[in-house]
Amino acid sequence: MVYGIKLDICDRIGYITGGETVYNIAIVDDDDAGAELLKKYLKKYTADSGFKDEFRVMRFCSGVEFIADYKPIYDVVLMDIQMPGR
Image 1 (cartoon, rainbow, N blue to C red):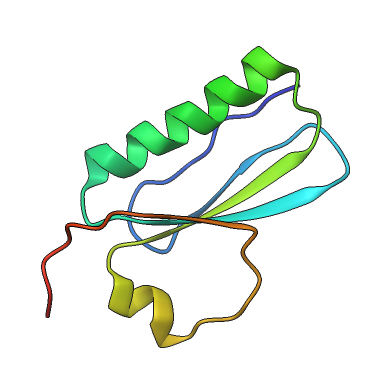
Image 2 (tube, rainbow, N blue to C red):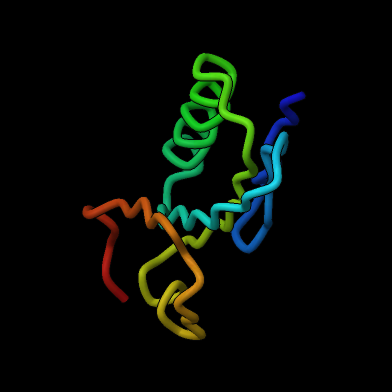
């Protein structure tokens, strides 16, 4: 069974579950629409491929936020390359 990911605002964790293996995915994007689109792609992938494992998704609104307290726990990092600098 596939459950939706909840990514309302930065720093929210979402899940797509269905199996025993957990893959940690970071979405680093300042654009809510872009982050939502990535979430939809992940959900569609699980539905179309029969993927049985779990995605744990963490959203960051900037590269600075992502590296501020970085821990090497992510299997995949999906990063927007055109975010404004601070």
